[in-house]
Every structure is written in structure tokens, then in C-alpha cells.
Image (tube, rainbow, N blue to C red):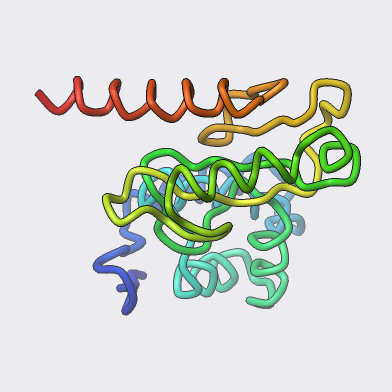
Length: 176
């Protein structure tokens, strides 16, 4: 079983990935293969950087579940990208507590600094700006999450500038 993405180049699910799916499914009783859906989505995301609709179909077929059920999981969690994203994915909390503590200001500042709107990726492919409903750190707002791993708290415009400039510098340094 293999697929090709028609949108952003090749994103085949090959035999090696199917072997990884099988390892995850084996962790559950035979009649509960669907429990491995998040693990399978993570395998695809790690390999390709995002989960395409075609990949969701393969996962659904593999796990014996409706494709819409896989899509519901993909779209529910911020950690699954539904299209290619920049090298740095910036998730800004837009929930009410963050908004009341300058979350809207932080978001507007990032949009201006990066020259993009929420949901877009910079032309150089370095940054994608996304929203998060809640990052669970209301007392530290405004907050953001970088690449689904690094929480940044109390993000004033100055701290946002330092973060963006630091990520750019680190990326440029790695390229040389």
C-alpha cells in the first residue's frame, strides 16, 4: 500500500511506515486497532511534516475506520499539520485569558513582523503562524508554542522580536 500526494510533492506511505503502523496497532487488542490512530498520524507527520488527506485515507483503511474519523482527529489537535508548514511553527494562544492580557497585541505584532496573517507561511518557508485555542498557561499570557514543543511565556513585543530574530540567526548559522 502506497500513496502519492497530489498537492505538495511526494508524500508516500511506504512499507517501512506500514511496519511502524503495525507496531503501534500491536499494542492494542485486535478489535481496537483504531486506538493507534494518533500514533499513525504522528508517524506520517514525522516523515512528511504534515498529514495529507491521502495519508488520512491510508490510515483509515489500515485501521478499518471511516476516513472522516481520522480527519476529525487530525483537525482537532494543533500538533497535526494539514499542509506543509514553515521550519518554525508558531502557535499563538488566542483564547480569552490570553486576549485579555495582550494576546491580540502579540498576534498583531507577529503578523506585522513576519509580513503574514494567521495561518500563513513566510515566503522563505521559515515561519508559519497559527492559532491555538488554549495552551494551558493562562497565568503566563500571552503565550505561544514553537514547533509543538517549546512554550514561550509573557511574550511582549520585545520578547517576540528576540525570539524571531534568534530563530532566524540560528537557522542562518546552521545553513553555513
